[in-house]
Image (tube, rainbow, N blue to C red; front, side, top):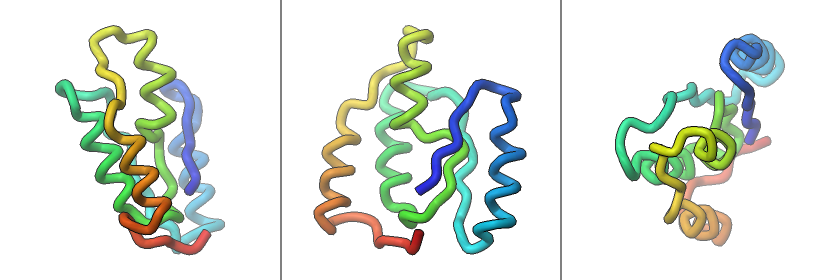
Amino acid sequence: MIVVEGVDNSGKSTLIKALQVVFPERPVQGSEGPPKYKGEMDERVARYIMQPANTIYDRHPCVSQPIYGTMRSHLDPILSAFHLLRRRDKGHGATSGQS
């Protein structure tokens, strides 16, 4: 898994394009922006957990939410997603991709 994180206009998309040249077999998950409703971050994490382990992410809720959630009080924390990560690590979730 590669997570590209940064403020707006910091070059995340440019870096991801360069990574795709080096790792063309890796799928890319684009940024979905700020949450649109309460609980959406948990839904995103649950979806992302099911993606191949070698995915390149343009931001990831498990990284972005703790950083930006403190600055935007209307965002809800990721509450239930971490148990999903533990399930995946124990072999109950997504299939492992090649890194």
